[in-house]
Image (tube, rainbow, N blue to C red; front, side, top):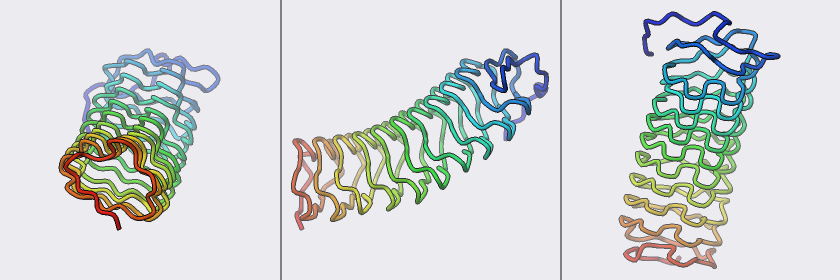
Length: 261
């Protein structure tokens, strides 16, 4: 926990609030305590508030709108369990964000929610979340630990693209769809097991995963699309089940030995 010398902000003069929605923060504190009467954090309410290091949300807040904290310098955040919706890009480009605890009521990690949060090191996705949205963790270059729940069914395209510190990730068996480029550019990723139930290994899914050495492909997979394992230079061999009947162009690196079983 960080310590700051600035006073906690408890004066409503620093907030523009309309019908329970915090429309804009206009203060200048490092630690901001949002008033208890707020139920919604509005679009871009804290955008580019570079001085803020921590924001405390009350448990009256139920919704955080798109771009709410974009370009902010917050370092830590706790989303109260009262929040059930966080819209797309809400924390995009919060380059100083190191830790965040998510609400247990979330069901979707929205599109580009944490994209370019380049100080974020780990995150636990709460049970109940069913989908990781498009580009949700795009370019989170320090992210080395991700915990995914057994309720997850979809990982959308480019969800973890260029997460260059991610060494391994346990994809739950509940996942049935993984989109194009979901792990593209995860250059430290060493091993991955595709869940049984996934039918398509999508285009560019593991493209440029330079250190990928071990991949387990289940019998449920029927198709491996173009570029899926291309430029995976450490993937010396790959066992492909007989269920796979279609393989796209340049699906593998030239040095990968393909073994059919």
